[in-house]
Amino acid sequence: MTARERVIPTNPQTAPQQANRMNFKDTLNIVRTLGTGYYREDWDRSISQLPGYQSLFSVISQSKSKVGTNIIVDDPQPDIQLGLLDPTSIAFTPLSAIEFQASWNSTPVGNQQENDFLKAFFIGTDYTSGPEPPYRVESRILHSPNRERNNGSYVFDLTDLAGRATAVLGVFYFAPGPNSGVLSPGTAKSIIATV
Figure 1 (cartoon, rainbow, N blue to C red):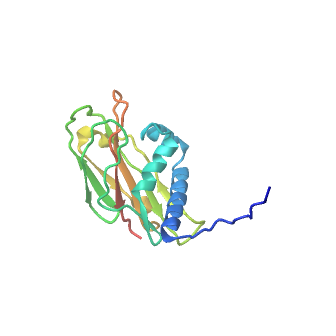
Figure 2 (figure 1 turned 60 degrees about the vertical axis):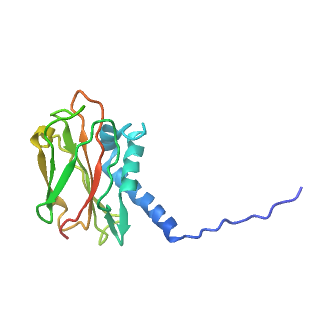
Figure 3 (figure 1 turned 135 degrees about the horizontal axis):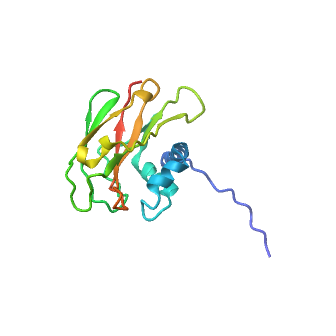
């Protein structure tokens, strides 16, 4: 019996490898910051029957990239299939540096319902102070009547992130009304807030 010489594996640390590692690290921090209650409520079994944590992780990791220290979403970003609710086409119109309007067809089609409602989350990044990475998270997921399908539009105000955020990542989708246990495809967008 002969002893095999110990081989220390190489770590090439190529640019793609480092980018993948950073993407994993950023996504992990974002999901943890958004919190257990959020991904359990809205994301459980939404992608390939994965638990909420993994579903949300999958969406965020595939929807963003990094330019310098800014987390961005390539635009246009393809829809992300979340569930079986018939998709809704959502148009985004910037109103100012910190406001934008989401608009959609208010008439239900297929298995859509009038009281389906639009949901979103926002992640601001600021690498100038605090622990790295110091995420600023805007995660007020309002079940507002103004976001219901029959309203047709909603204005998102990012005032809370203005002045301390360099970029915002949002994933937008329709959550079901009370009679449909499915989600619609989501659309990730990059919204730049005032610095």
